[in-house]
Length: 632
Image (cartoon, rainbow, N blue to C red):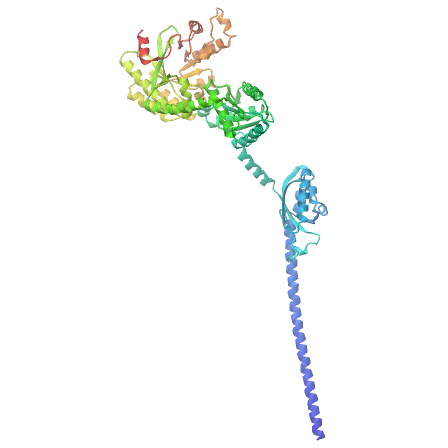
């Protein structure tokens, strides 16, 4: 029994021992597994730390080497750290930025604005972003400064990368140099409010300023003034010389005007050759305002007494000026004021150009009449309400030499309307081309009939005034050639009178048309010679056969016994004598217009003038009266 018990006990001890050994082995195995797991976790952690460190370093590298200025600030706006680009932008060494307030690098007048905005942002817990534009000093100098922009946001402490920044750092900002952007914005703004050619304020800017001025006048019970200016005959210059020369003339005019405009006044360009001046002063007495505006207009006119030099060539410029003293009516708005000044300007043009006119209520009726005339003129072209009058040209001895055809408008209820009443309307409306074609064809037709009927000699020529618009078209020469062929008229019988402005260079089409017609055998005459822009060189190089002395030079001619001495002292004598001498030197015919007295005729004969025309001989006559005059 004992032996069996001992055997069982030993068996149990062996089993217990084996169990403990097994438990130990299992524990060792588990410990080994845990050790391996820890090693794997440590490796993963090391890799994660290395990756995080690499990412952080990349972040810092990007931060430090970024092409834009970066800085982290505390709640007071003190720089905690900054990158190299910011140091370069501000013109200081990088280590000198730490601990300094960013506001120190701003222009003095912008520092208080930045402080207040930054403080409000820092003290507002919900504020996440900030965006401020400013002028930044560089190297402590305004001259070296730049237009800056700060864009920033609060650091996110829950972000693994941003949490690496010091807790003192609460804001990450980007400082940008937006100088070029600001320049572009300023350029766009300037172009939106200024004329591209002259650099003057444009219509939009004028209307804004005029709105303020008109409101002030109504509020203070005072009066302001607006001057509407138009360059006389600019369209002719532009058409004949080309747009480039026209633009240069506008630029030269603007330069001249700038030197005479006061700081408080606004000079603006409305478009084309139209300019306005808004006077900066107001007066409670409208008469005082009007007197000051008149003086200013006279000052501007006087400033143009000296010619503008464009491409080394003198241009004598005159202005037609209309003035509106506003408010004319209590209910007037900006458009009313501009329209009133514009209406007054057109009245100045109609009265003779180079004049100043104030707006008054009667002018509204004049403007309405002008619109009515334009409409009636269109009807007149359709219904051929025009009639040709003829004014003879004579040799100085009194023999018939040539005939000038002049158009008259036989209005159904106005009667005969002279050209000075409707030609300007025809030119401005574009109807001058159709009217010119009518005059040309009907003159040729009438002339051919008179020659066939033996009413005028074969050697008598007819002259016709030709507008710039007609010469602008290359088809004009073809049209003239077609008329000459149709009516079987020799080109040598026809003279085309043109203005001096059409002789100017750079008008290639007009040059080609004049050259083509001259080659056919037509003669070109320069009308009103001495009042425009032409020179001896231009006359010499153009196919011109005749000069017509303007009547303004003839009207003051007076007979003197010692004329040879006075001719060098009197401007009228000198001018007429110079034109006659030029004509003789170049082999050109010279016709004196506007001869009204026997005395003028004697003076012209004494000076050697060959041909004359004017009321001294006869006024322009309708066809029937002209033939009776010739027969007599």
